[in-house]
Amino acid sequence: MPLCSSVLVVFGLLYLKQAQQKGISTWTSMIAVSWSCALMFPVLAVTMGGRMHPQLLWQPATMGCLFLAGQLFTFLAVEKGDVSIAAPVLGVKVLIVPATAPMFVNEQASTQIWLAAAIAVIGIGFIQVRDESVDRAKILTSVGFALLAAVSMTLFDLLIARWAENWGAGYFLPIGITWAAVLSLAFLKRGDSLTELRRKKALKPLTIGAVLMALQAIGMTLTIGHFQDVTRVNIVYSLRGLWGVLLTWLLAQKLVESDTTTGHRTMAMRLLGALLIGVSVVISVNE
Image (tube, rainbow, N blue to C red):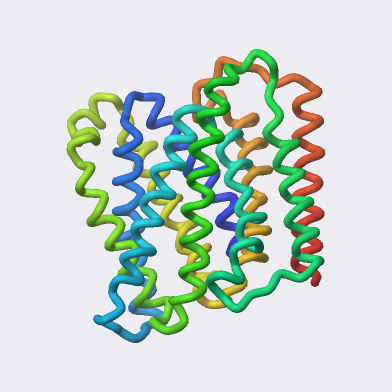
């Protein structure tokens, strides 16, 4: 599931970037994704079930707030830069997770997992190499938002691993995501109306992107909630950095507008980074 999610999230971000380039706001993307998730996650309650704990409703509510923050920072990173910047930088989760996991869950990362995480981070560094023609200020802003998203989503993952077992993934995840969707309505005035979306011809890419983001979120959260192996799941998920670079390069002209070209040196560095991330995944899953 994390592997499939790593592909779906990149396609989702590319479609949302296309919608943003048609003039929609980041708030619209956040609201659309939140509600797409809220409409799809209840399927887990029907198929998996769980246990209701009214006195602990603050737990899924906290998780929902972190999910909303993570989505907002992710879309701001994509808006200020592009998917080939945001997706790799989000991969720093593979280093944050093993460092903070002992504070939240009974998970001590082995030397092999730390090695895999370190190799993945080095790979991420190679993947985000940019040509000199690109506006560095935009890169720094995009990287900053991506780092905030990584921190938010790291806490989100760890709290799922800590609390979901007591609730059951079928209840905990839908309640938390629904809370995030309800909270997103507070920003409705900052978003675009349905009439504006149609006028800007952004409704289709926004809908496709939001549905893909919801599907990948189900895959990731369900895996973490069931197995509680946050570190390995995030190392495999870090492959989105590779797909982000390759798909942005291959599909840039079809899905997003791009006024920059990628040199041979840059592509060679990114391919080296992709290889390192692949090595880190092999190391982590073969422990």
